[in-house]
Image 1 (cartoon, one colour):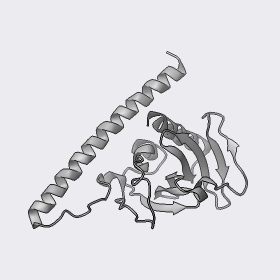
Image 2 (tube, rainbow, N blue to C red):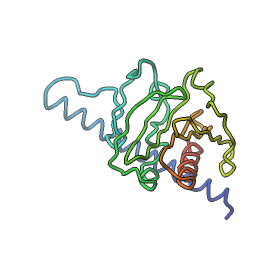
Image 3 (cartoon, rainbow, N blue to C red):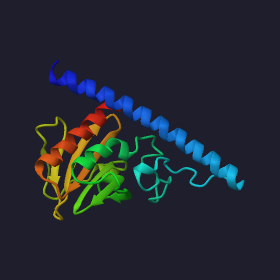
Image 4 (cartoon, rainbow, N blue to C red):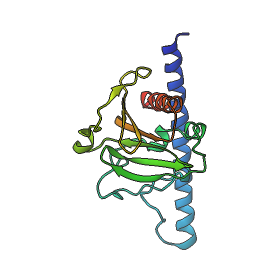
Length: 192
């Protein structure tokens, strides 16, 4: 079996796992809402928030002042930047995300022990038009990916996928760790 065949098979498996996880998360959210409403007789708390607490900070539509990935029907960044991959590069599974907007996109960031990884969707024209001050160069190991360094030491990887343009933001990692996360995100994007 060739490399591309294996990559395609892995992407298909990842898509199946992601769909299964999404279904379980939706079921858990529905159950929690039903219990909450039944216990206090009021509307369920957190309506509109993304349900799986493992994703970190619950996303509330419009919480950054304008529509984000959820309103556009995009996959939560926590599912595109897998928890196992974050854990492998030293960002523990217990690390909760923060929801942020940067000049290059809207998304989630996980920070722990001097390391950080984030995944951002380029949703608006100014985000899509963002160019790093020092320019960017191709990531030869991942077709269609571009790499850039910001003056503050953060690394950005620009990727295209079924969900649109995303930016992987990394800091405190070596080249091998950055490449591993870039490849993991590229596989997730190929599966969407």
